Length: 520
Image (cartoon, rainbow, N blue to C red; front, side, top):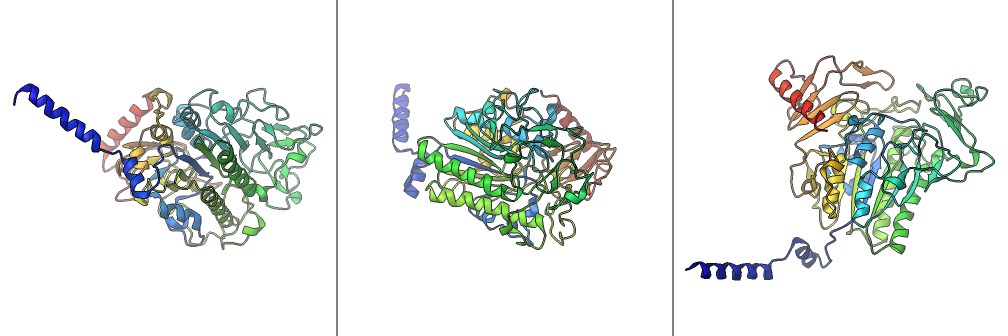
């Protein structure tokens, strides 16, 4: 056969293949009878302070989470999924920007009056999805700062979510235990009376004559602090920071889950009514199960663990409401739901709410050591479930995953790949996220008071100066003045430090961590 005949044969073969080949989307459509969605709606349910072991599908027995369990049953449950940090603000920063928070100063746990820490106009997960044609919304806890150095709570509050990629916004500025205790919708405080202006301050009192939780504990009618949290009294609970004014705008703690959930459902409903021709991204950032734990009365007493158990049930109800709404709108199969937490669990985080005395045999971090604030696995290993009916096959995965990779992975999914310099640390792990591969990240830097490095089954924890136990929360920090080494495959509870036995492995991981630190 001469060259011309060979080329003709190859061309004929290629034409046959092109004629009969069908992409996976087309095959899926033939199998299910439904067109395969290439750009799904995305609902990111981001819980606060929920531990790996706080849900029944991960082993909890004293509390039941049927709606989260349903997500796990119908989706992919990752056993090695992580938040970027062991505390809230840095996790949220890293998840939205694709950059480890430890690379940037000022990304620690923020006060309620902090200015926005994400540069306006910077690429974020939200703006990446916007570029792909998504309508984006955030509902719930923000805790990334608002405004600039001249922030006035009584006027237009900007920059904020709008300036970092969100089209709609209904948020609380920080946390329930910090002032200001008001909601911000779009760019203004909700229900603010202009004749009763808000003033917020951290550090020293606005008016030393006003009672605080420390000076007048008899005024604390709902819950008393166990440590700190003894400043401005609002709704019978003392908070961190000082606030005056805004009485008509104050939230009701017990109704917060209902308020946030109703806003999340409204975003989805309105979107389908007005913008059904485009996909949506909803960042549903729950305040539960953060302190102060004040569940709605209908959830009080639903567990034997007191308020902490009851707000887990309340959190699960919020998830159920989202799932019911997706079904009612007929968009279940068109929607990817991601369920995860901003850091590991904490039991006593500042209030006397019986969380310690009623814990019983419940293990908030599951089989892992530590929790919120800790360098041990319990600090960042969190619930991590993804459901997309018809596209993600139900099951479990051991892939090493991190929320910081949502930006690169979801960007790839929706046809908006993120340039590496615009998401320095976000890695494309889309095949693992979709359950098509068991290979996730090769390495992960875990962030608490010090850095830890995951590489395969090995984990290195840097030397640290903190006490072994953070006394206020009774949390093991995981820090010692020397490096620590664990093999998580053999010792997932990090009980055997191998640093002295394997000095070469310590040096290898230290060099790798230094390389990652210097990559920027």
